[in-house]
Amino acid sequence: MQTGTIVRKNTNGYGFISREGAEGDLFFHANELVGTSFDDIREGDKVTFEVIDSPDKPGKQNAIKVSLA
Image (cartoon, rainbow, N blue to C red; front, side, top):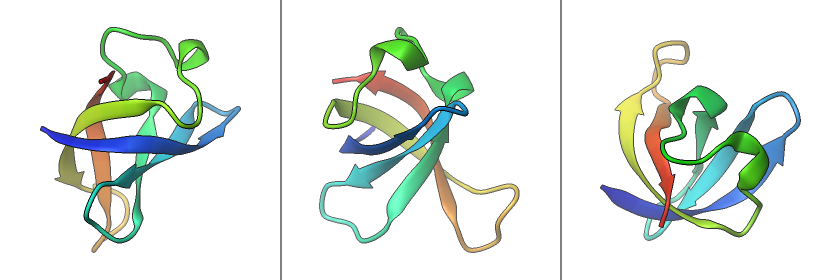
């Protein structure tokens, strides 16, 4: 598991996570939240997650299994 911070949250059910020690933010979708709902997370919250290669955008990565730290 990696750790990071919610840096942006969109009203359409997705957002972005800043990874500690890495450049570039990771996309995440509300469906990937574990143990919390999209309405309960806030920008600035610390989270843990796993990283996968994006199925839609070659060369990009997404966060999955996102949970509050």
